[in-house]
Image (cartoon, rainbow, N blue to C red; front, side, top):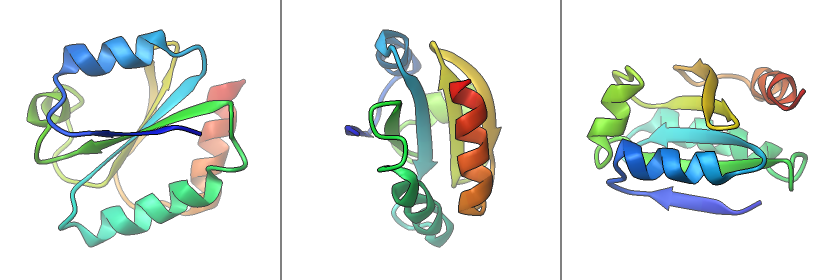
Length: 110
């Protein structure tokens, strides 16, 4: 699974990327200073192999992508945004157990 480190992306550039994807997309929004983000990142990384080839993962820097963060109504990191065919389908706004993230990904892929 390819990973993209998005730093300072505009909403237009991000939407161009996710709309070009034929697979579902997951955006993990966080900041290096946020301990909860690191826990969230580990949860997603643990699922990476399970969904290889079925899911595109993007990492968005909360502090450098303020316009994008604002567009999705995010107040603080971490957050996980779930997209299918470029449309936001679901989101998690806090550190969440891996099993719940997995269930949301499975629902996204159906």
